[in-house]
Image (cartoon, rainbow, N blue to C red):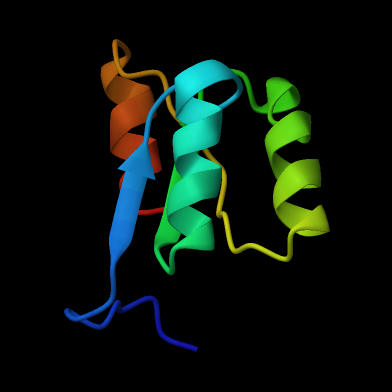
Amino acid sequence: MSNKVDARQKVAVITGSSRGIGLETSLTLAENGFTVYPTVRNIDKASNLTETANKRNLLAKVVQLDVINDTSVRQAIPA
């Protein structure tokens, strides 16, 4: 399986997805056909997102990302 994404495919990267607006945005976009990459600083706080996405049969590929940490950003991009 290739990591390449079809240019016609709708893709979204959402920061702050463990709760609040980021969580709801991630779920809403996934429900509307986007391939969603919700990001969280602390992967341990992603359980609400992953559980909800699984219950709704949504594709959400959670990625750990702290936008103020250069190393975290460099590691998250390939994911």
